[in-house]
Amino acid sequence: MIVYNLKCENRHEFEGWFASGAAFEDQAAAGLLTCPECGSVEIEKAPMAPALAGTKKSVITAEESKKLRQFVAGMKKYVKENADYVGKAFPEEARKIHYGEAEERHIYGEASVEQAKELIEEGVDIAALPPDFDKEAN
Image (tube, rainbow, N blue to C red; front, side):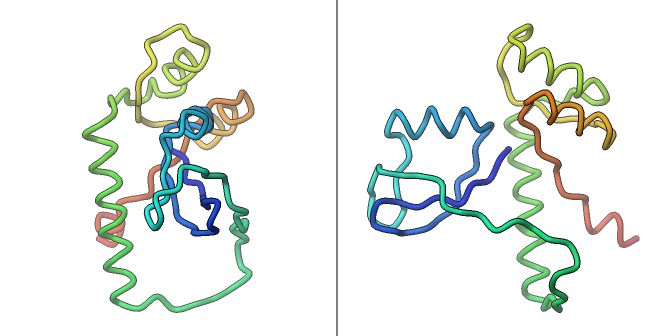
């Protein structure tokens, strides 16, 4: 999954989640994206600030932490309900899908950091799922 900051012709900004960069392009070209505020179908990517480690220290409130956990749980639930789990075969299966050697579908599984870097270098659209914060705390 890829998250893009989007904006409409009326400068309303919002987020969009896509299976790949190509999925965004296809949906935008087909007029399938609409602004949740005004309904415009003239949608483009908005500039995104890069995440820079160590540039800002802030304290997350209990309410923000709760919302973050709920968001992560919801995202993981969505992935599990809408994608096939392929386990450690993820890198190989992602390549097969990318190169048209396997049926196009959403998958999730396991990959090392090195395997993930190789997939990204090959142009395979991937995204890491956030860790399970509750399990890590124990």
